[in-house]
Amino acid sequence: MRKTVPLKKNADFKKIYAKGSSAASKYVIFFWLKNRHDINRVGFIASKKVGKSVVRNRARRLMKEAFRAYEEHIESGYDFILIARQTIKDATYHDVKKSIAYLLKKSKLIK
Image (cartoon, rainbow, N blue to C red; front, side, top):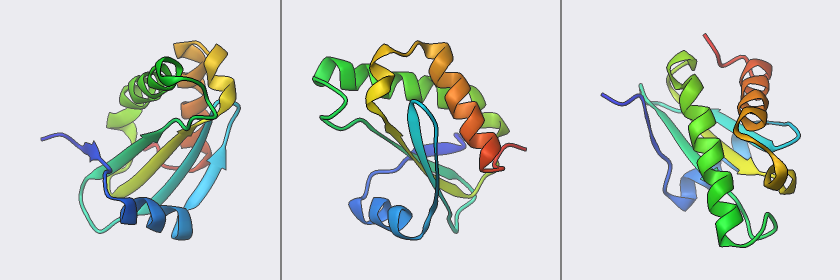
């Protein structure tokens, strides 16, 4: 069974923003909140400030792939939101991966 599922409901996003913790790096803003499930739920956001649709889709793909690389090492039972910053336009996959690794270590969510 997959350990991480998509976060889709607006109410869940609002709850994480209101009650969750956050951290930021050069390319990504990271929110997390403990949930009552045995699985992780994650949402990826790239607003129109990041760029046109091609740039936003690339930003989301970069974040998804970088998060997937660390997915098996993350503690279960959390909701996550990853928000792309404008600087992600010029970032490579490895830059985003390092950024997400830094945020996961800072939040103490890696096993």
